[in-house]
Image (cartoon, rainbow, N blue to C red; front, side, top):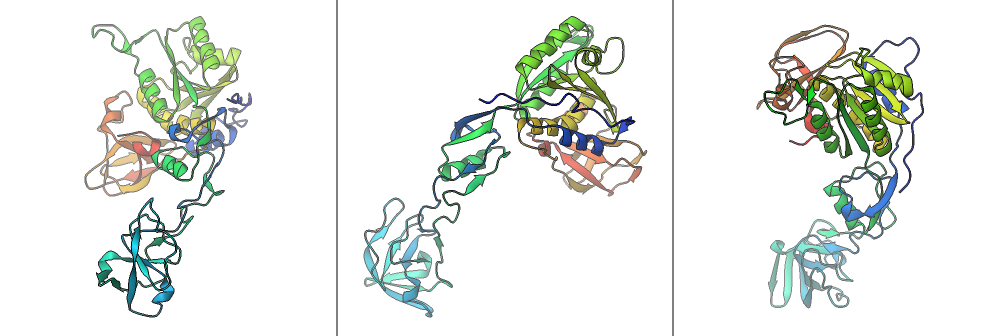
Length: 422
């Protein structure tokens, strides 16, 4: 396996004088500044589900390897019936079936029985559908197809040996595995799975499953962010829940830098007395606090710890969820070797009303109605975590002011467009 690469110390530096960063500008900076850090390895093509190609995959065999029948019927040479509406040819004994070719060459002016997938015999080039033919007294009469080569699949019609079948950066799914196997590709060179360390900090946080009468707030972010990282196809390194203690957080960050390719934190990235993440990054690493014109969200601390990129998310779970989808997901794609991935979205009519102020991009928890309209959660309060599971996507409202009424076209981003399952 190749060793993973490292990013430049200034990769997250903002241009001088920049305070508020529009969403599109922030995304552009991430896209331009980041590069792949994942190493490579060779795996069997059949075991490559979810992996990202590091090198193009090249066909080792032609598919189909020979001309073959697309239907059950009768094979013949087009020249023997050219210009006629009806054919009437002697039926040669024997047949061609998948895996059992017709023996020898089909005599000139004759036809033979052929089944779907069988190689077309030498001396034939066209197949007539059996429903369009009638066998009587050793001859086959049929309505002539419209063109030569009808109902026949040509050799190499899908791929020829030496062709590139999948490009580097392709994430391999079930369809891609079928493509690789059919082209005779036995092994592929893929990127090692991106390892993303997830860290929660805060004295007020409780481990999931804590007794109901415990004082504090259950740590929602770490299991949520870990689930998102897994859904994106990456590997989670759990750095645990750490108290507001600089030494403990330093140990956790050091573990992340050793075991992971990127670190994802939530909370502790502002400038308060207990915001140890941002302070430690300033003192022992590099950090840039991006004040992004986005709601929910805004503060996004980006930096390096021992050369490993750190994404410091807001502590609010809804804001952490949204900023992970909008900013961390495409950034991880670049780090993992897949390249920058825009979320899939489309325009639908609104089923809500809103008077939006200018200045920030807004993302509303939303879902589609049976009529294909986007309705939004009953409240924009970012503390209402239930709105995340109520929704099946986000409505993205532009940076500028907007008056949304019922029927106004809005951009809808389904969770599935971010790679999240149902």
